[in-house]
Length: 175
Image 1 (tube, one colour):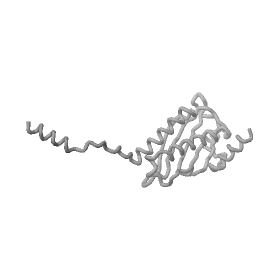
Image 2 (cartoon, one colour):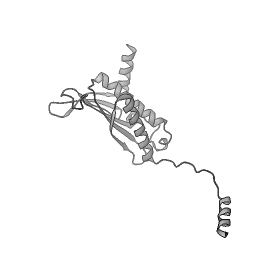
Image 3 (tube, helix red, strand yellow):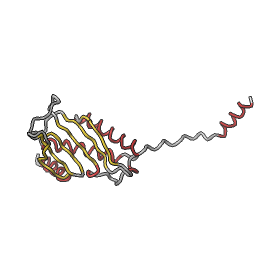
Image 4 (cartoon, helix red, strand yellow):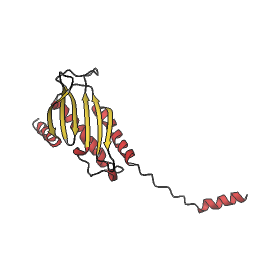
């Protein structure tokens, strides 16, 4: 009985205010943003997630996503696909308040993300030599690469993120 009275007194003296939710760690925040973006790009753009990465020793300097795309593309079709993925990734990062305190700079910019798109034929085989095989955004620069006859990738065009945006805007304003 005396334990029951002690327990009752203990409960009355306790503070029953709800605890604040735990703040996610830097890694948890980065994983959540990458996973959310990858899922949305898979559903809306048929980009199949195949990898992710980051650079975050102290602050988050860079976040990366890699995708497979199972339809041949030329540069004019690959450019808007890559820019759509980049814009979605940046939007998700910059709108996420949980990750914001960990970012090296806010807002995150194209130089802070890396996106790789590996292009295959619709039957999941490698595109023939001479066709666009990889589109890569890194450090604010986009590279378009083809399979060479030597089984190596060869960069056929490099442009800045800003130049790619201008080309898209110019092509849509002419239509």
